[in-house]
Image 1 (spheres, rainbow, N blue to C red):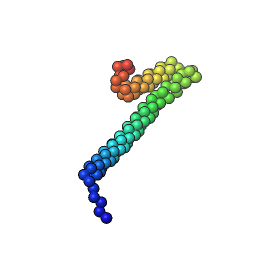
Image 2 (cartoon, one colour):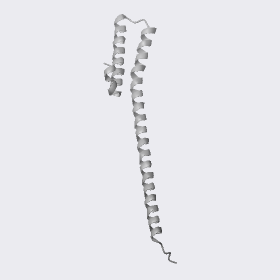
Image 3 (cartoon, one colour):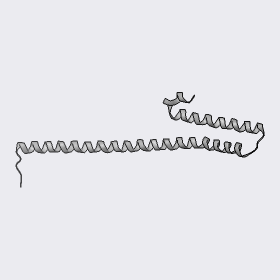
Image 4 (spheres, helix red, strand yellow):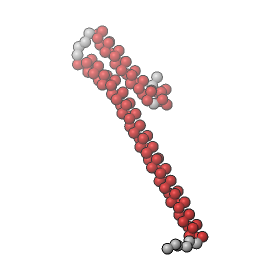
Length: 109
């Protein structure tokens, strides 16, 4: 049985179709945006994890050198050697801070 559609019915179906299409496109755009946000979030988390790891190494070394200097009686030349190693680790930490935050580089000469 064939249904006769009036001009108003055709316009309504066309408008409904356009509306549905626009809604579908909006949904797709939102989904793509959601995926991009998740990718950016993952990238930021990886970067933070990497920076954290890079900072932990020199800080751990500093703790070890400091403990050695405080707990042991060392000859002056050995103490000086440890102090130089501590300076190297401090410089490494500042380098990490400079390279991780380019806008803040002037704070850590």
